[in-house]
Image (tube, rainbow, N blue to C red):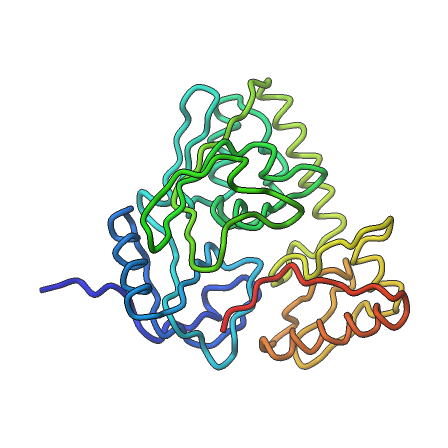
Length: 288
């Protein structure tokens, strides 16, 4: 009996950190490079959009559902190991798992990832960062799967910039090599503790969110400060709420839909545009 390539009708509200989203028409969990390549080839041959969702952060999926193929990398595509001062991770490896492996090997440079609840693949694709660091500072190369096959892209080819990279929709970061540096284990733990404490004090870490809503615009004031200055903390549409803790986060206050979240985002963008003449750009990824 042939194993199906995907499941049908998986509720994305169960797969996203914000807890919204309709069913995925096709939900696949490739656990090997060969399985991933097969899915990418099928998507290309049938003209199906392909999207990787990682652990479901930084993501809003349409309430009506998402067509094409939705991927979550597992097995060897989520494995992590250390080679000398290099960390090798599957694109589906959780940032927390990678950080734990690096800390265990007394390797520093990835501490900032304690504030990013996603995967290595997603972090590389958007050049995620926090506290003055980002993946561009550590990634040596990444194995990227496209319809043309798998190819290693070096740091220059990845063309990292603020919250973006050369990774295009439909491409999949299957594996990555990160160059870290030797540091004392106590030093690494101390930095992580300080960053975690700061995050808990300034962000809604115990609420359902998808992460940051907007990219920070050029200038001294961040997106959250601009939204807050418009008096929009605690603005609510349906079950979606601008966090009273940090205005660059939207909380699922109960029963939120993606439409609720998009309505809040639209109002925040409008108010900031009217008040400050700044056009906020969303950081969250939209599916469907």
